[in-house]
Amino acid sequence: MDRTQPKGSPRVPAGTMGDGGTTYSGVNPNAVWLNSRGIWLSYVIAVTILHLILLSIPFLNVAQAWTLTNVVHNIGNYIFLHMLKGTPWETNWDQGKSRLLTHWEQIDFGEQFTTTRKFLFLAPVILFILASFYTKYDPLHFVFNLSTMLLVLIPKLPQLHGVRIFGINKY
Image (tube, rainbow, N blue to C red):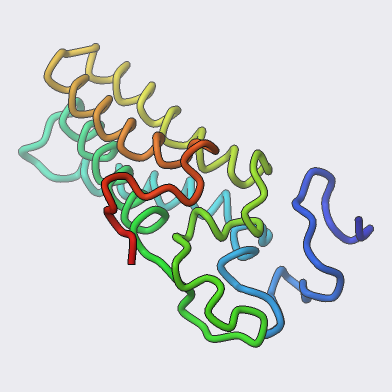
């Protein structure tokens, strides 16, 4: 492993990471951008800003704001990581290899149980726990929070890597 990579980071081919986590055109940017410096903090800040915006809406109470934060986060997470396929940039490395892969399947070149994947797996769980706590475990809110959390966690399981259930999102 390259000495410039932090401990626990995925194996990235030598010479693919530039200063500040930028990638050169030889590697799939979808595979490594989530390992860049400050991405996790930016993710947490974005979710916090979403929650504060929802809290500032006068007709929403705290429980509704937490449930909406969780639902919007999880639906956005599902669309961005599990529905969108391919890469936004054409690279010499890719040559169509990533055309049928979702963003989740491209992260860390498909390697399972990396720190980035663990973070993206734990974020909805922590948000679900917070939403459940602040809604005082109200059954209606709990159903919405749990169903969207399962919607986003089940596709992240290693057993479903590359699997298209009922042919959904096959092409």
